[in-house]
Image 1 (cartoon, rainbow, N blue to C red):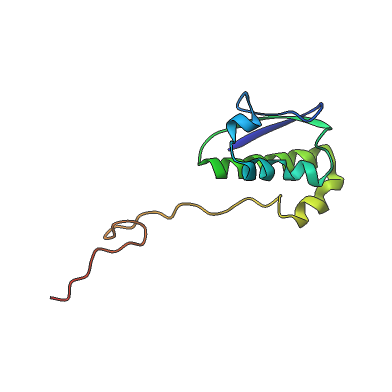
Image 2: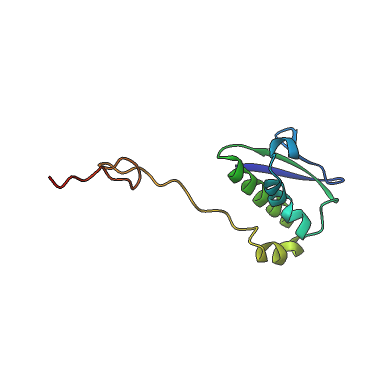
Length: 115
């Protein structure tokens, strides 16, 4: 879950009171987070303050990107078509499948023996 605040500024991104590059060390994740800002040409218009928790590093980056995209929409509705075309306004619906009784995991069955 990510909480995003956009404040007018020079483009500094803070995640959990840490610099973006310190919290997300991979360049691909940083690019994923900066995508909504770069597509709308607002990289240097806002400072972004994020509080994120839960999940892994990649899913946290996705949550932050979704939060930034939604915050940009609240600031300026004209960005909707650009963000929607890139799929940045869509939440990832995948969830962990529950474990079923009689099985070892969600779909893994115990070994079958013919004799």
